Amino acid sequence: MVPKVLIVDDDQSWLSLIQKELANYAENFMIRTADSGEAALAIINREHIMLVVSDLRMPGMDGFDLLSRILGSYPDIPVIIVTAYDRPKTKDVVFRSGAAGYLTKPFESDVLAREINKMLRKKAEGGNLNNVSLETFLQLVEMEQQTCTLQVMNKAGNNGGVLFFRNGELFNARIGEQQGKSAAYEILSWSSVSVSIENDCVFDEKLIEGDLQAILLDAMRSKDENEEARQAAAEENEIVLDEPVSATESEEGEGAPHQMVPSENPGPDQPAEAQQPEEELSPVEAVRRRLTGSLGSYTGVKDVYSDTKWEPLVSTAASVGEIFGFGELSAIYANKGGEGQYLIMPGEETTIISIDPDAPRDKIIGAVS
Amino acid sequence: MADMFKDVLGIEGVHGVLVFSEKGDVSVSQFTTDCQSDAEKIKGVDWSAMVNELSGITEAEIMFDEGRFYVRKAGAGYLLVILDDQAPVSMVRLNCEVLLPTLEKQKVGKGIGQLLRKKIF
Image (cartoon, rainbow over all chains, first blue to last red; front, side):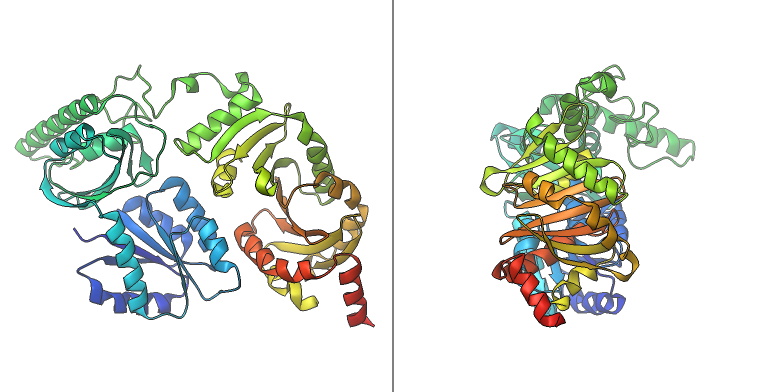
C-alpha cells in the first residue's frame, strides 16, 4: 500500500498545482490535500496519514496550531512546514515547535518530493514486510526486545494503524485519534497486513498494560468472533460491520471493544485512579491526573509540585488582567532560560509544572488548560 | 518605528504592543484601530510591580479566560503583546522572535524614547 501524504494550504490553486506535479511520484506516495488546519485534522483522524506538509500562515488554525495538535494526538506523524513567510529565525522557531522539516516557498516540486521521500524512508528504515503474519512478527519483536514503530496497513479495510514498541514491550497503539489497548486490539484483529518498520519509538512510558501474549490472545479471540459473526450474517444475508465494533460504539463506552476486556477491569485507557472524583484530589494530584489523561506517556513534564514563591507573580498578573477585562487568570508560562521553563497554575494552592527545556510547551499548556 | 511592530499588530486578535523598561516606564505603546481604548487601560497598571515579578524570566505567557499577554525580555526591558483568546499565539511568538534583535539594539526606555521623539519632532 502506498503511504499517504497530506498537504495543507489555504491556497487552493497552489494545492492543485503541487498535487498535479507530485503525481509523478505516485509509486512512492499518494497525495491528499486539505485547505485548512481543521480539514487536515479530520482527514488525519479518518485516514492513515504517514506525513503532513503544512503551510504556516493560514486563516483559522495556522500551521503552528496544526503542528501542535499533531504532536499532541499523532506524535508519530512528522510535519514539514512550508512557508513564504521566511524571516530570520523563522526556521529556528519552526524546528523548536517540533517540526520535522522546513521549506521556503517558492520551491520546485522535486525539492518537496525529495524531502517527502527522505522522511518516508526513515519511517521504513527497518524494512517493509508484505503479507506477514502480524502475531508471529510481534512475537519476534518481543523476543528480540526491539524498540520500533510499526506502521501497519490493513489490506482488507484499506486503512492503517501504528504500534509502538520499546524494548520488546507494546507501549501504545494508534488508529486515527484512538489510542491505547482498544486501538491495539483492532490492529491485531486485521488478517492481511503489510508492515513498515521504523527503528524508533516516540513513547517513553507504557500506555498499554499487560503482556503481549495476553493482548494477542484477546485479539485473536476477537478476530474469531468477528469471523463467526461475519459468516453467520452471510448465511442470513445480512450486512455486518467489516471491522470490530470500535470503543466509542461499544455499549461499555470507553475502553476496549466489546467482549474483549471485562467491564470491571478499567484497563490503561481508564486508569483506576479515574474512579476518584477530581474534586477530592489535591490541586497537584488533579493537575497530574489531567496531564496523564491528556499526554499519556509524554515525558516533557519534569515535575508537578506546589510552590508559594510564584504567588506574587500570580497576584500581579491577575490584577493586570482585571484592568483589561480578561476574566480569570488560568495559567502563566514562564521561561527562565537555563534554569528551566514552568507552567504556573493558580488556585487554592499554586501548582507548578516544571517542563523539560526542549519540550514544546503548547502540548502541556493544552493538556491542563 | 511604527513599521517595526506592523507585522505583530497585523496578526488577527492582537490588541496592542508595549515596550517598558526595567523600571516599569512605558516607552512604546501601539494599538490596533479597534483597540485604542486599551491605551487608557495601560495607564492603570503598575508596570514596575510587573517588572519586579518578571525578574529572571526571559519569556512569559499570561493566560486568562478571555485574553492573554505575551512577554519577552528585550534588552534592558520587556516587550509585551496584548492578545485576545483567539489570537494565533505561535505566530505572535515568531514575530517577536524576529523583532527581538532590533529591540535589543535599542536601550529600551531611553533609547527607544529618543528614537520616537526624533521621528515625531
